[in-house]
Image (cartoon, rainbow, N blue to C red; front, side, top):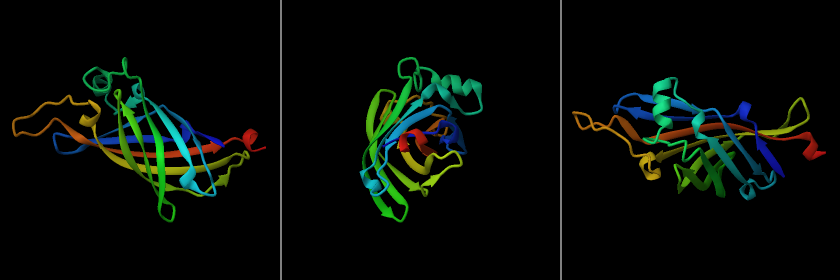
Length: 178
């Protein structure tokens, strides 16, 4: 059955080091996708997520515009990023490993997400819902996001490792379950 991502109850965040010191954090506000969830055997589930890269928000308009430019995401040429599952493996309890393909900046590479699934519930409006929290770390250079500046002490202005974290609710509307 096709479950949809509830964008109003989904947060996709990232963090990357600035000057090798503190992490700059950001969010992508527009995330959509769907999943075919097998509640009896979650390892047989599959999903696809699509991110509107222009929806990036780091709380600094100048930095956000630079990230949207050809130096980084080049949103005019690559307006979306996506993740599609290939395999799900149960680890322990409600913890899973999700292997899939991340496409970013026109480059597709395998990425493994560490995931934790909530219980399945029926919300007050009769829809089935669940939530999944995922974490991963990627190297942005692997996806062609190589812009940087080397500073005096040999430090990079922008770190290459990017930590990803998402909290996502998926919903199966009543019309589908009825």
